[in-house]
Image 1 (cartoon, rainbow, N blue to C red):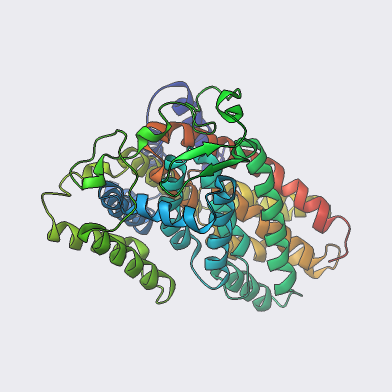
Image 2: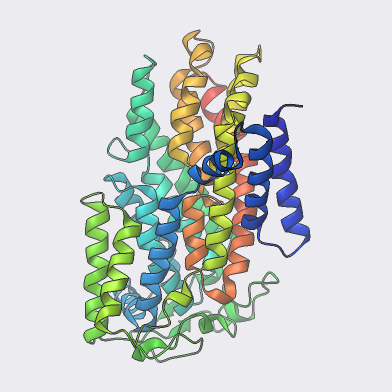
Length: 463
């Protein structure tokens, strides 16, 4: 049995073990990386350790820590609550529109060139503030933001679009940047309609928040009395306890859970925090600076200005989530280093039926991207499909678009950067719920997106 097959089996075993036992999957993944690395990597123990640590996602670590650190401060002093209040006034208080506003704002950012993780890192904490204040299911909010990022992610100006179109051009394949962009946009809009219906969107219809930030229900309590899925604790329907996830920091005094009055004005701390958030957004979106390092810098500057006020902020970083995500990504990167992805690609190349090979390529893209960089997967898998694309038996534009969609919609997995950011910024008492629902949804996308896009874009042969 090859090391590549063993690494795949070890990954499956890690998931089973973490599901059966209350052990952090990231920690299990690091142990698996040590075992597989020792078996597959020649050299001394130091060489094995160096190879494992080379796959540690340092950038993702800093993003997760930096963003949750900064927004812990923003939640504590009431800045997030104030943003929620202002945005609600802008939409006339119609709560059902909030997830869609988050969807289109994130799509607009990525369509004009924002890196997908940066856009999600900036919008997710604000969106989760909306979810807490107005008792929206955090999974609905998180998936709307992730789907929005994917919807705009393949525009000709975006990083995904530039990379995909560049790889296509380098391999002398026919391409259509417009079809790639529109295909992803339409697919994600339709997908988000499904998300809206599945995760409590219908219960939001008719609910309106007044200018003080409180919520009223035009349906005379129908949403509150509607049955809900076990484990949601009333988030979707506005049941008791939903708003406890915010901090008590309307005064900037602490980081404990509890109800607090709506924040409708800016004080000095909130004004400085708002300036910091705008600075991070401009630096990340306009100048392409690392959003994690920017967020850490902003959080430290705010802490220097009020060290005693924000001394509890670091404790609010989602450390278990950081361990989980960084551990699993480290292991998947090791799998790539020992040739597991290339091994799967070679197996695809041996398939004699082009249409079946195209479906398998989409499945590989979806499965690997759920745990790793979508950008890296797009650059690696399109060349694997070149031989049978050049043969003309499968439409290049259709397959590339199907592969792009299949590899990006799985970013909702909590092991991918976007899903990790949403999980890390979820209210602490709902974080496990969000993590599990995103994992189920992400894996369902691994199973569903490839055959759907394959049937729509590849099998008909019109692209």
